[in-house]
Image (cartoon, rainbow over the protein chains, first blue to last red):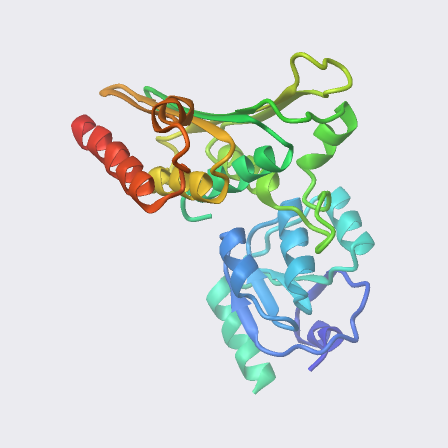
Length: 108
Length: 183
């Protein structure tokens, strides 16, 4: 499944420089240094952290997209940074667990 | 980082890379405020560089495009309501007195405060990896102070390398003893 395809399932695009990226697995975490060493390339990464370091960690780990759960919003200047750094960011109004369950079903 | 001690290690490594001959790691606990200072006499940074090191997309490393040491320390203190400041004087600006001073304050009673963790291990790791540069570690608490100054050790030990097994285990025990006295 690609990042673009998630848009058909209630996820909203925050920054989508490369929606054609394939999603392979999911990682969940908010402690950025922890995520940095554990998220795998092409994972969709579910988090509620919305500072500039989130974008940096996504770029470092080369996740296919960040999914901001619980309806948290990212400031507009950070959205611009994400576009510049070619980091895909989507948002979901659902809580983290429900977001993960939905992804699990979609990726099955 | 699950522990501030890992943050400390990361930032102190930057000091060593900046050519510091002495790197000071100062932890001061006063009430519910913890102040962390990392002070070095390395080559210093220009104003532009100081501004950019808090940006995770800035790094002096060539192997990757993101440097997370300072950005994560800034995040860790700001999420407790504290702040991070950096002042620096370059070697060109002042050949006699140059270096960088990083100060991070934390409110330890905030629920998002990251525990200090095993800072003795961080100090040992630094000495192990850089036996030819000096470190001053001072941890002040309401119950007393833990201190280690490698310049004093060097004077006594003369030619014995600081990262030899016996010296390292002595330092480990020395720090542990001081911490035990506090509790």
